[in-house]
Image (cartoon, rainbow, N blue to C red; front, side, top):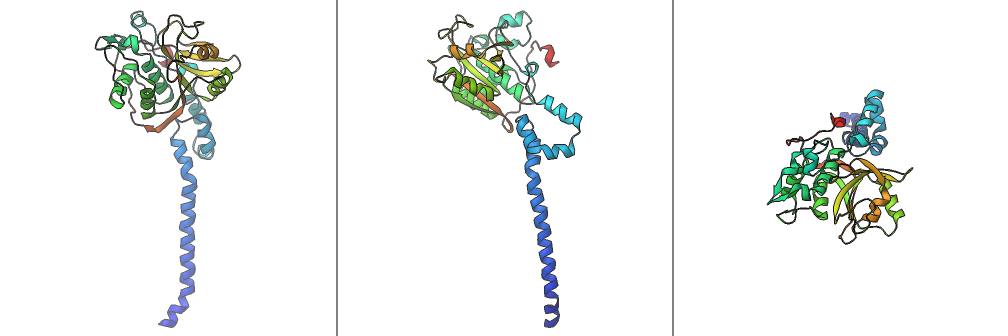
Length: 289
């Protein structure tokens, strides 16, 4: 019996080694493929990381038509950028991007008077994510998920609450103070998806007049003419226009603790809200139809 066992030991050992090598090969293959699959599912981050990390997977699984459709779907361009308006005049005149949220209030404090920051936050969430919510939805979520507590006197959301809420929405963002030079600000804007900036005519009234403090949202910096696409919740005439980036820099409100919130991207897996749908009546623009 012992002789038979000794006879088959080498063969059994070889078979065991082959099995182990086979399992190792399968495991390594899965480990190699896993990052590509994970990155491909996370298609809402940004186009460059999507194609850099998942080119092989996309090549094998998507047609050229599908790939081009994906690029169009997750590339930011002017028509896709949401630019909500906050005030009652825009709503009464039927101007696109306005809604009945302008008629809501907190202890008599009308949304049209303090909702600029919340409009900007809704713009960012809707433009970068696959979801769509109203500025009032953003207001309610901010109240329930942060220390934001508007009242009859003060309703504007502050910087830290803004950052906290957007991060819970999956938006990667940071707060900054005004750089020492315009060139530094310019270089940073080239790399960002968007920014919420606090402007005041007390610093510079070239573009904004009689404005003590106001949040606006900027997108799509163009190096060739040094302009940005402006989401201006308080002025329908200036909303969705291109203005020099210099106007923003010069008008930044330096007496505030921070001057702007820089948006670096969006991560679907970090989004703890994932709300979708606008219940309020609003003037939906034709580009979103």
